[in-house]
Image 1 (cartoon, rainbow, N blue to C red):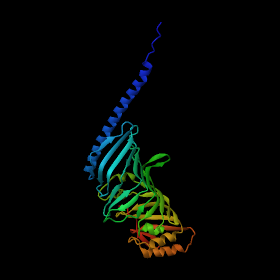
Image 2 (cartoon, one colour):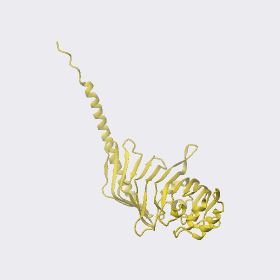
Image 3 (cartoon, rainbow, N blue to C red):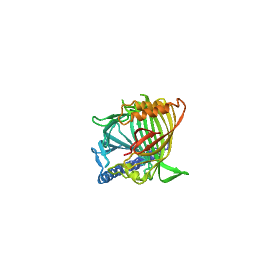
Image 4 (cartoon, rainbow, N blue to C red):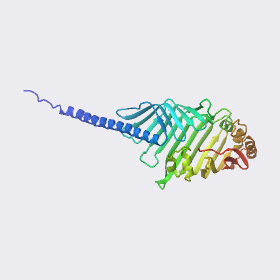
Length: 344
């Protein structure tokens, strides 16, 4: 009597299902890769028509099966304002199952172009930008520079920082009662242990120590930041009445520290900030005296020395101060310290 033969269908079915799923997933991946290439071409043409200069060697799309990886060799992008970024390679990546969240990295560093100031090389352990919620009015944006160094190209203006442990910038829609506000964006900026360039204002203020900062604020009229013209993105925003509101944060400059707050700051037509910032400072005299001894031509050494002497009267006790941006200058009481920060 022969033994019954067992059906092999139970073994074949799982492999058939896996093969079918793999074929469907592969079809999805290639369709997604084609969509990415198509939309990149459309976006590049749109930017060129708006006055941007976009150049790179042929793009490659790889990463099957789980990622979409787009490589831009010899990338060079210049906005109508003259601001630009160049890199030997830029790489954009997204998970194939979540194409609404992209990570852009510069494996070999960047060269930034600053209109009127020249170029600056930025290198670091990691330089990355993350963008998500692309279908929202204001996508979530994260910029992270890990152990960056900042080196001006020969003939370019110096940069206040030489290096840092970390630089971070985060943006997201402003929430009111749990709902996204119509035209407002929250911003968080964090600088960890920044080191100033030799002879610069940061090195002076920190007494060759470290500068750390954490500042958060809300941007009103945020939709106007999308318009980039020859004057830069903030020019359009300023002309439309944009303001920074609910400004608060903390600064640590060497042995000096301060908590800061401001109800509102705006920019003048020339791009310099206007408004007032309240500070509760500890040992501010040391930072201001360091500014007075700085070799930076932007610092009013006489005004800084006067402000340092006035602040020094308080000794080590916390003191309430007001930093005023007025008439294109930065004032501490009656003392003009330096030009007001400039947005564009």
